[in-house]
View 1 (cartoon, helix red, strand yellow):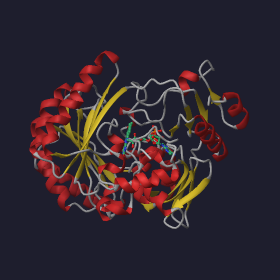
View 2: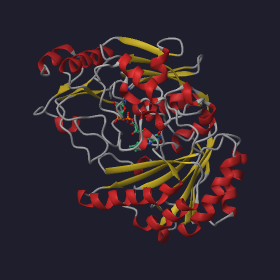
View 3: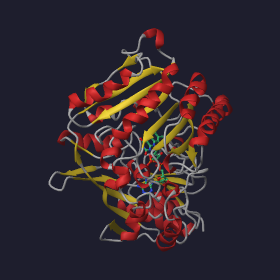
View 4: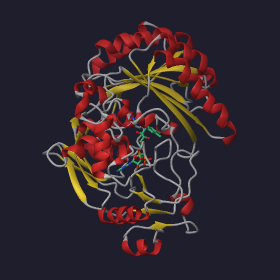
Length: 453
Ligand SMILES: Cc1cc2nc3c(=O)[nH]c(=O)nc-3n(C[C@H](O)[C@H](O)[C@H](O)COP(=O)(O)OP(=O)(O)OC[C@H]3O[C@@H](n4cnc5c(N)ncnc54)[C@H](O)[C@@H]3O)c2cc1C
């Protein structure tokens, strides 16, 4: 059945932008500039009723519906050729309930909106490290951030969600209502329905101590070894990670060192400030930083300080790995591949994946892969399409260089869809398939790390 664009226009309150319409080329783009798809129409949903209408229209075609939250999916799951896209960008409201210590967050909100609403109350929850990333895709696929060692993944802080199912009905998923759906959406991605609002648990995070310390690549081995030793006994108030990248043109970086490949330790400490400064300072015992910018700062500021490195439209190719420990291969790969980083934005992050993330039993949520100690992100980023081959080769080269130390698979939200499965590789896949058969037997929601019903 073909898509009745005119019927849809008459039914929904939001805009329906089809090929040939003014604004189509802006409406169809997503964050990754490499993804250039041409949907049949982009429906900017104005509310839950619009979401229901577009789900019903897409289900009737049999061709599926692409759902877009923040549009940050690097494989471009928030869009697809020739089908309807439900763009949730206007479902971006955030309401803080001080009594319950929760935030009700629209399904298309970004982490910026969450932080803007929660920070004035000294509250926060685990969110992404770039504030323009969507709450939707990040939470449904797990959600790693500065606060995950202390408070768990973003999906671990979910109290409930309002979900539009494939038949257009609306349900609440929580521990007590549709518990199997609630299990599945915490790690199983967008496979089960459109989440129109998320309710998150909030925590007191009045101020943090943090920022980056940049070390020369010659010291990568010593710094990574110290990081591994440090993290084994670090209190959960510590939530930082080592990062490979070019030293930025920031005022605290000596002018003659800008653009040099370096290993940074990016720290965030949510406990007593003096203790945080002392603990973070211990990295100076193994090597002398070339530059540093560590001090008291608001969590929201720290958690968006790298936004400048993530403008929309650049070309992105990513790989991911799980590690049990940071072995010598990571330091060797940083030294070998650091000088040829594809751009000032390209980076490798090694996130500790312990603390509160390990408190949650693997079977409690669909995000099952919880026993690794680190998640690696190899993010190839560049601007010129002529650099595609070189950029992709660089990412694959780095990834292969650490493969000997890595487990199979990786964190789904960091993958191109070619190796990491829904649930982070460790979920009960038969249980996920059963949930898919129950909630979306026709696979209306197929533009994601798809679970075949
Ligand atoms: C610059 C950048 C920084 C990042 N930083 C982090 C980070 O710090 N931590 C981390 O864990 N990950 C991070 N990621 C990865 C991120 O988690 C994924 O890219 C995630 O898919 C982004 O969600 P989104 O809503 O922006 O994406 P979209 O492209 O809009 O959606 C991604 C997938 O989720 C589905 N989806 C989105 N919203 C909904 C909804 N409301 N209901 C149902 N399905 C929905 C979509 O259908 C699609 O399948 C980052 C990505 C980028 C590009």
